[in-house]
Every structure is written in C-alpha cells, then in structure tokens.
Length: 311
Ligand code: UDP
Image 1 (cartoon, helix red, strand yellow):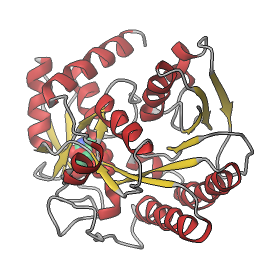
Image 2 (cartoon, protein in one colour):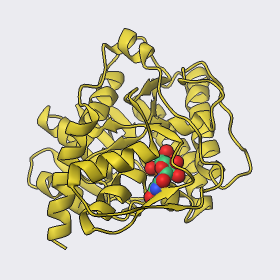
Image 3 (tube, protein in one colour):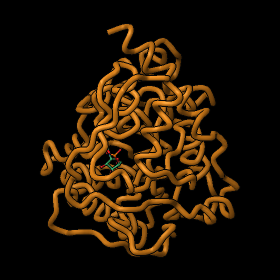
Image 4 (cartoon, protein in one colour):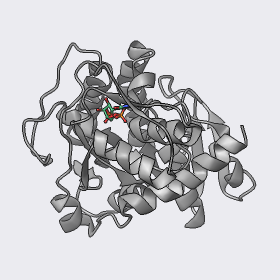
C-alpha cells in the first residue's frame, strides 16, 4: 500500500513511518519541519519505498495514497501556543485539505486527535462518549478547539461524502526522538535531570497525566487504521496515572541526578487530571499498551543521553 504520513518527521510520525516501512509499505513522509526534524527520519532515507516531501498541509496538495495518517500539528503547549492562528489553521485548513485528498483518492484517513478534546475533564477516567470541558477562548483553545473542529470535519466528510475515516484520541506519549526543547514534561524533566539543572514543576505537581510509550502508541494507530467497521473515536494511551511530582521523583531516582525540584507558576487552563479509559480500544482493536513506565523511561533516557552527548 502507499501510505501518506503528514507530520512524518515528528516524534510520533517518525516512529510510525519506521513501522510502516518495516511492513513493506510505500511511505510518503510529509512535514513542514516546524516541530519535526529530518534527523528523525535519516535512517529511513536510503530505504526503498520511503520518500519525503517538504510541505505545509494548510496548502492543498495532490498525491496518490491508499491510506493517510494525518499527524501534522504542533502538539506541545509551548509550540502550539507560539503561533496559535497557525495551529488553528493546521486543524481547519490542513484537515480540510487532507479530507479533500482522501475524498478524491478514496484513501482511508486517520486523524490524530487528542485527549485535549476532553479539556479539564469532569469525568475520570475519560471515556470516548464524554463531551469534555474545554475553555473555548483560552490559551489552549487554538489546539483544543482546533482538534475538536478537526473531529467535526472528519465526521461531516464521512456523513456527507462517505469518506472512509478513523479518529484516534492520543493521550500523553513519550519516548526517543522527542525534541530536547519540546517543552513537555517528560522531555523537560529528563533533560534537566541529565544536566543536573533544577527540575521545574508547574503548580504543586498534584496534577496527573498518563504516559504511553511511543511504540505502544504507534501500534494502536496502525491497529485502528486497519480495523474493519469501526471509525472511532477511540482513546489510545496508557491508563497508568501519575502525579507530576511523582514523575519528577521517578526521573530523579532513575537518573541518580543531584537536581533539585523547584516549583513554578501553573500555566493557564492546565488540566487537573487525565487518564484514558481504554476499554473500547481493547474490545474493538484488541489493543493495550505493554511498556511499563520505568522501562519506557529507561529507553527514553538512553536516547537523551546520546543526544545530549552529541550536542
Ligand atoms: N509540566 C511541568 N513542568 C514542565 C513541563 C510541564 O510541571 O517542565 C506540567 C504541565 O503543567 C502539565 C503536565 O506537566 O500539568 C503535562 O504537561 P505537558 O506540556 O507535557 O503536556 P499536556 O498534557 O499539558 O499537554
């Protein structure tokens, strides 16, 4: 099959491209390199069947594909708030462009949606039938509302034009190839611990997140893309839930770092609790994560040690 991966040079996208190339698909990796990096796909460049296109999906493009994974969008709060208008455009114009492409080529399209759909949730853990609690005018809304519009567009193209869609709600994911300056909690804590710098907890660190190792996550994406008679939305994430303070202590323990924990101001609209209910993924896809947090963090630490050493 020919598979288009938008955001293919990003953290999750590059792991997905690798898996698809290994499965002998022809892979077109598309990226504008705002947060992605060519380095992430260097090892794939010489592989037959792998090609790369520099393109921003907010502009239309015509390529032939059987399947489209639409991952293109900055996902770290630091980066999606850097140019919020552009973030909304990626989710409205970009998703429309990809849906038009899917409509014309009759490709199946999978949208990388997000747990941010649920905002600061009143229901815990989050199930797919929960409509969420999102501030429509806040600093996170460029991403949250953008991704909600993207889901609405997916469903409308499906109902109106019978486009073959899949919607996956991705919860916090970590692993090798996260950018050093990504700004998210796992990469920040690891880089700070390895450099012996202060570990920055925003707020009191009582807020929770659930962290999924990237190989588990991309396995879930592929399972969903190839599922029959199930369009989602489906949560893909690891239900193990940790406080941010607990994560900081865990990273210090695993690294043996002398770093101190310091407390900084909590960003606006930062969700208090987050954990996926993954019963739907288990029932419909036979999918569940397999990598425990310490094992995943060890692998991630190895990557960051190498990356920091290499400058
Ligand atoms: N966070 C933190 N220190 C950091 C980065 C993030 O305490 O250096 C907190 C952040 O306020 C949030 C959680 O960790 O409560 C997860 O943040 P992240 O940006 O990784 O992802 P989010 O789930 O908020 O999109």
